[in-house]
Image: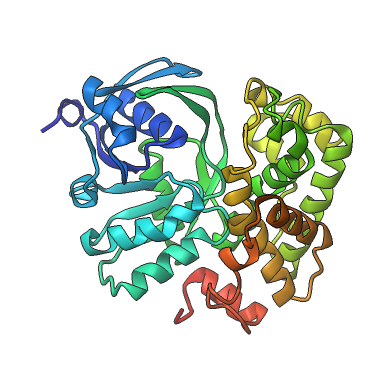
Length: 369
């Protein structure tokens, strides 16, 4: 039995040792829980294995002592009640495939975050793998930390967000998920269903458009604060159009999605009369530098796994998304990558031809999908 368990801590797994995974694993360990950190490759684990801890600076300070750091999925999730998947959306499919043989009844898997339709894709993979274990698949609307790894076993937490909705496939189990998460985090609140948490993926509004519209600065490796200096008044006008189209697609499904400006207030207590004003007032964004390449998850993840599914469901529901379509097309040209082909579409999610009724039933777990 680990020291954390002797002190009353709970067993939890964090899958992924990137910026977010290190922040979550370190903080959970610092809170006294027994944390198993998994990563598919050895390289990101060597520093943690040598020290046995993750050093946290910023909003939280201290050293979180881990129970284990491993590349074995079986070891990572064995005997664990909560499995936190903290990888880019393009890693969800691989995680589901690797996890499938080792899941047992009663485990809760949470995608941090699901991006758009992450929980739905994850559940489909488990079904294809013939998983019979009674597990709950859930997704968070956004990632709880704004963080960056600063070394092989060091991470800086700029801000811990609050009031983050979480929903599960089989919506009646959302209270079970929230009860489980609140053993660790009071910040999580019930979401209505997985379609609502997916449509409220605000990264889809911010990341791709800011990257596309600042492509010259990024390629020239100019240091600038991504959300603060990259989001000028003109750029945020485009963000507002992306936001409006996202909200209209959600409305066609009978879902009221919050605006990006409302989200900034909920997550960061940052308000303003315009999106530009609210972003400028968000201290949590200060100090976060822009990427130094266009080969970055803000495009490679957020376009195919955030914007493409919104536009695809828009097509399904006869809602036009011209600004979103243009950002997808520009990103495709910038990176010479067919994001439509790569992304989560109605076709590869298995929802082509579904009516609004079918989709709403799917969200509450009354569909055979």
